[in-house]
Image (cartoon, rainbow, N blue to C red; front, side, top):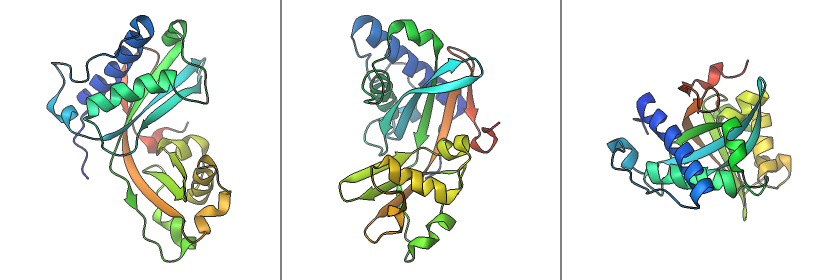
Length: 211
């Protein structure tokens, strides 16, 4: 899949995510899913994740991250749903309070549809994964874990560690990616983020993200 989402459209999505969170926290209301001024490309279905990071000096601390791996909703609607869920429904964190929002950086990652990696020998999986480009989904039975493309870059993982950490995210043993019956999917993402809370919005080039 070729991405058609431009920087201008990415900026729209990040602002839309912030507006969705603010409106929900202030009024308990979900903003309309298809604003009149929404660009045509954002009416198409895409997978998307919204990530919230607390800005603590020069460091960022995760405050919530939820989304849709599959293109099940128009992108604008999926962004609104994901933003509100990231702020109020991530089970790892208490709901965001309005007083926190001015310290939170909002990031939107638009995804390509996940593609099953076909690999007769599981030990070859690391050679099929490109860190800085690919995100991963690991499935085994009912267990499922997803990590976005930016995660291994931020943590300095190689492809094998990325696979192990995705298994841990799924709640299974780190070496489960080597076992028969485990399914590994990869996808790509375009990342748009504020450079500071309510600040300028840029497209994040993952290869350059780690400082």
